[in-house]
Image 1 (cartoon, rainbow, N blue to C red):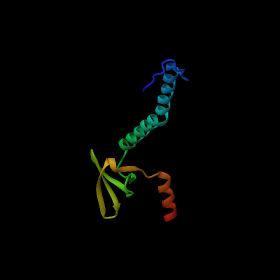
Image 2: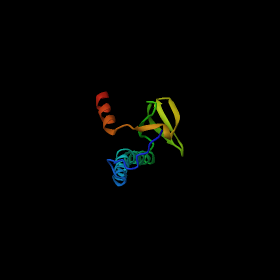
Image 3: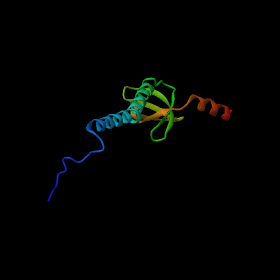
Image 4: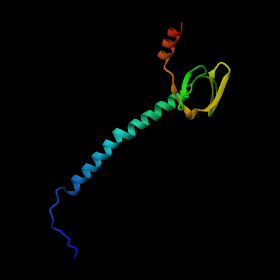
Length: 108
C-alpha cells in the first residue's frame, strides 16, 4: 500500500538545504529584526529627550505643547485654557522644527 523510495535521488543534499535556511534567517534579520531594533532605539532616545515646550503629536492625532513631564505621563496644552494628561507611550513624535518656523512665517 505505501511504498518507500529509499534510493530516490534528491535534487538537494542536506547541506545545501541548511545553507538555504541560514540565508533565509540572515535575510529576515536584515529586513525585519534590525530595522525594528533601530526604530525602537530612536523612539527611546526621543522619549528621553522630551522637554517642556516641545511641540508633539499623539498617536491619536492631537497636536500640542508639553507643559509638564512626569515619570510615566506628560501634560499637553492643546489650546489656551485646555491641558490634558497623556501617557508617554501615546506620543507619536515630535513636530518638526522646520514646520514650526514655516507656520510662524505664514501666520505673520
